[in-house]
Length: 47
Image 1 (spheres, rainbow, N blue to C red):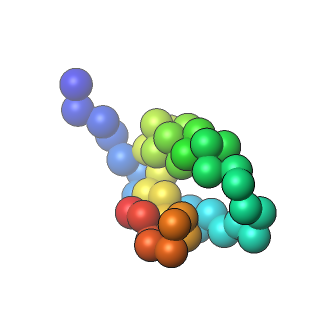
Image 2: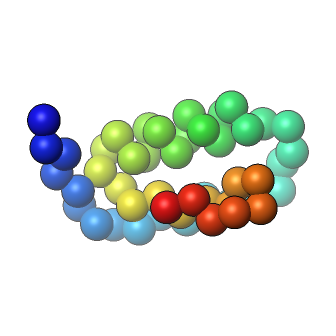
């Protein structure tokens, strides 16, 4: 099924360490709603 993207960009930044699984859930949730999510995670920008 084709996902409709709304092309709203959201940047997630976190200074909290050892919460990668929660950051992955935030990314997945926002991505699932159609947002273009950018986040610094493991020293790489994920898009």
